[in-house]
Image (tube, rainbow, N blue to C red; front, top):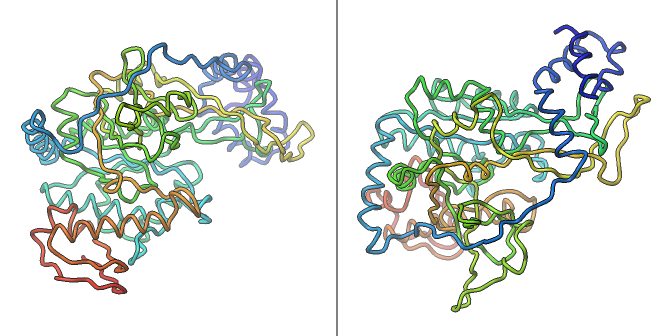
Length: 464
């Protein structure tokens, strides 16, 4: 990559300072910096600086905000026939090879005290399986169930792409067909000073961070995954994030509802734990289904209740979606992902004009991200389905307290106990149980398995 035209372009958009140390760098350093700059849409960067960085866009809340009417977890009389048809349709799509699994796995385990990709973190109560293995075994079991391997798309980040590939290779891809695994990197965005300059983390590197989970939809296009899906005939993606070991990576009922309702983007919701739980809120705003972040929904609305005392706005977003591949392609038409950017003020270490590393003690920079749920606004016939928190949501986000490894393991044990009790096994309080997805994917499958009659307190039982 020739330096001169790049320097000219950077100067034309007021960003020439990122090359101020270029002459000092060795060839490897110069190549690194040029590669980072080449990955950016510089014209779009200039637009974002003017519209998002130098000014703080006003947050315009919709004029009318109403609760969403989600499909119920268990069907009543009006939905029973539809749910039966949907489950069969979901299985049919899987058997036809029209569904791919999409794991967003760019995060690091830093907040958990783990130095490496979060997907490597051990989460299960007895076998200490890493998150990647939990998902691999689920997908392997579903592949066995439907008679064909389900393609698995995994989005990594700049920092964890190499380690993730090495981890899968080291563990033999957890028995999954390597030809069915497509790993690709998330895009990166530079951090900007408050006056709009791209910051350097080192003399040879921009201060970069991932472009948000919404950027996953751009990365699918840029990383070649969409082309691979077209080659394989995949029409729908089952989207989930890396930190939730209870997630059902594949859910035929949900996928079938998504398809039969003509939805381009469908989402799972759970009733919130409390009015101010830090999850997004599915709402109908000015007549359109969308998600309003917990930090943006006025507390007066968040705490509103119905006549029976239940929360009026009680549809929490848990980052589980189904998306049509054709919809993702449409969002990427013209080479730019058609989602809004979100601005956050952060503390970002940077190299100053004298080449010294500065570690700020207050926010000094703007980071820009895109959020996947903003795509709902652009989707045709978007649909929301209610799932059970105890069945499908217990993320590992914090080292201690809520959403920690301890709480997630406890929830995994409780779910396994419920499944076993449904199958006729008596499980004492204090017993530790773990069920491999290869043994059973849900409570219903346990009815066809040979099960112990009783598991006593103090026993640890792993079913595989």
